[in-house]
Image (cartoon, rainbow, N blue to C red; front, side, top):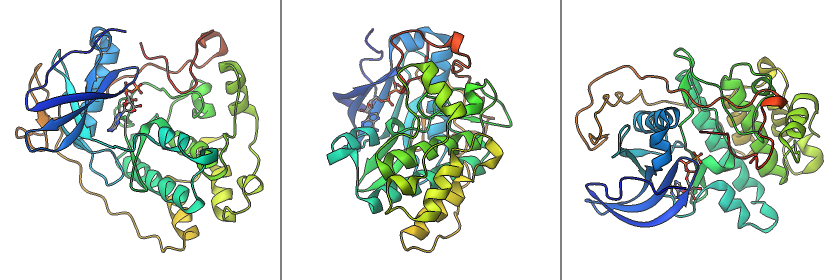
Length: 331
Ligand SMILES: Nc1ncnc2c1ncn2[C@@H]1O[C@H](COP(=O)(O)OP(=O)(O)OP(=O)(O)O)[C@@H](O)[C@H]1O
């Protein structure tokens, strides 16, 4: 794997690497104001492949545009070109999968799990309200801080009105995506349903050792009721988790119904969500130009949907070996 460019970002002191994904190297950085940030820097191979570079640009633009307490906030970024990067909030506790791996039995106390799930459901309610689909809801893309969750990684997010390529991660992908059909808010809800099982009973509802086994499980099997696996889970929450995994998208509840059920089970009275208006879209920038909340003025321009690599829809298209059920094939 090649080293990313750039090796320096004006305005930031680059510190140690926090992690590396398929697309980018993430480094801790300190801004001119002394604030620690996570700097996503695309790998050279990401920039070399048009679709991958477009996806990174999409992530930069949408992260800077959306604003919600449970979406990872973006501070500044350059969407395209050799100097592209994205500065986002730094989460010292890391991603939810890393957080769970540190827990005994990979399980958090029930109230803590419900809080995190309610936060993610809230973020999805916001995206769906705006007509956007996240397409990659999974524990690896949720960041945790002091018991609260923020959803990140908007590289595959698109507005349904503008269209976008269908993608997902095999452990979390809804049956309609395996069938090669379109994604929607309901396919995000399906992925949230998978996370409800992971967090509330410590196991995934569908497993498989190969892509084909996993595909068959998602398309044909029905999960055990959550409440049978963990009798402490409230009946309504268990029922909504099962419904979230309905084979047909229109049989699934909304993210907001799940949020409300979780809050009610926690003894709270759910309030209606109140949303910020969309940030002005960052302008289309030349290489090296920067957009952000404390950067240049941002004229209104329409967002361009950025295509992502489609998830393999048929067994014959599935990766034969070395497949990773947490990752889509990206390049
Ligand atoms: N905001 C952050 N704060 C702390 N650590 C982070 C942050 N963002 C990313 N990381 C670390 O960097 C790793 C790689 O990040 P990420 O998975 O987002 O990379 P990516 O290449 O953009 O994603 P993908 O592999 O889905 O294309 C994460 O697993 C995590 O350990």
